Image (cartoon, rainbow, N blue to C red; front, side, top):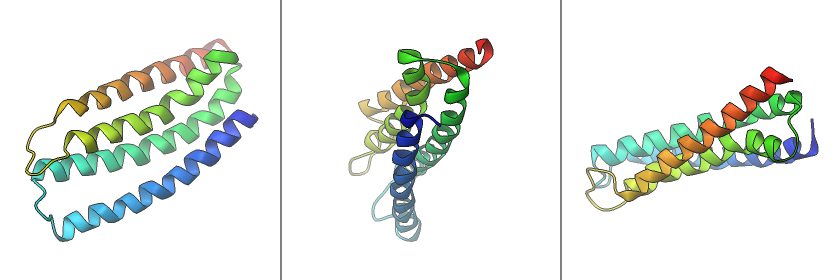
Length: 133
């Protein structure tokens, strides 16, 4: 495993610990919604789930980046696309639902779409790199 992938993997594994603690927030909402709307609870669940799944996908992708033969900026895009999405998308879900009594997303929902775009570019780069390796 390259040094770049090893270091990023370490960061992603530590990040999963923060996602785990975020699960405590969901349990709190489940036990006592504390004024949260069903929309806010749904977006909290979506943010938490996206964080965990994307971090695991990012870890898996690191193994393939090192096998793709991609170098330089291309390797960086392939290696970091999903981890960046793992930040942007959950942040979008949580921020878009912030505020007392909110029932629709605010402008921060754009972070979800930005994260999806970054992830698509990273995954496409990795996929092409693997096909031409």
